[in-house]
Image 1 (cartoon, helix red, strand yellow):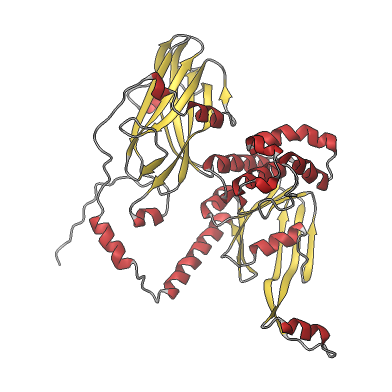
Image 2 (tube, rainbow, N blue to C red):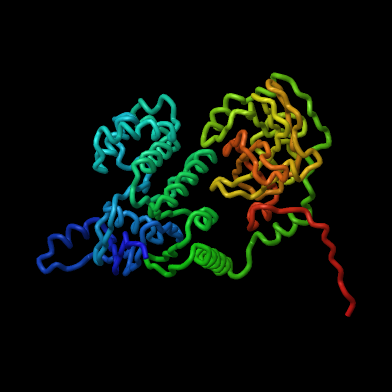
Length: 454
């Protein structure tokens, strides 16, 4: 059994609450130590053990005590009572830019953070390039961090904490800042760290992220640890508690029910238009190519035989889009260049959520057009996939791959090019019900309702 790296015994954190400011002075000066304050417990009698390599999610309403617990574990706060034992080096993202000197540049803050974690200058020299590359904030890395946006803070803070090789990584909602590409990069890095044995404590209101990333979770309510179980069990219990709370607050009836019923009656299938423009020019094939190549560089895998020159998401008029209305037909366009003679090239794509979870996968083997055959060096092909998007309202990205078979069965492909972060897009749902519904994929059903006679 793995070693216990965090052990909490009856941890409590209490704050004094005063009705008036003058009461602080009265309490401090009273000769008989009369109390003018009341204790507010942000955390009360919390006990648990976390073993090395575990990935644990913390779930609870705002003000439940999650951040207080993490700050005690990292040493930012001292508990009012109880005992805490922590073994190993901790890296934490509790508040964006916490610990950064606003007057120092990004590079200077990287070295300072390493120094605080007992790394030598030489050790940080070996990590600096990887940190800067992952943060990907361009020339701002040499500017004072006080000039950074919240997204830049998040990028640099995560990069520093991920690449200093901590034993324990603690993250409190920091990944909610930034685009889907950055969030996906962070999730991939966190999975890599978990596989290497790093212990992760992850606080997020994104219950899908907690279920996908964590094996175990704590449910905290009113400063108490009310549930310690699998992530799936804790997430479902938390969702049930939220539903019950909303039901009680509304007196058992939602004031929006009538409006929702009328909206569902009036809702009709979205049709994006029947005009299809598949015209191909050198100009539109290169549109946004620079952005694609920059994003595609992350964790790209290539063998040199063929490569993606560009990947675009288009509407049926052939215009690049980044937002898709639920039910809209779109075209995923792949521009493929051959650097060698290739007898047969297969193509595929994944649709992933911002946490990097595969939701949809398709392959040219499943279609009428199985592959590109007998391509010559220097050839450029354009592959268009047309489909209807029926995903919940959220951010997504495409991961795209092209490969050659090493066996006739195609079961063992040789990857020519794999781009994990090819195109980002957001699904928008005009229907409130669809935007709130569970699950990610909603498909069309030929549904019939019949009333039987008595």
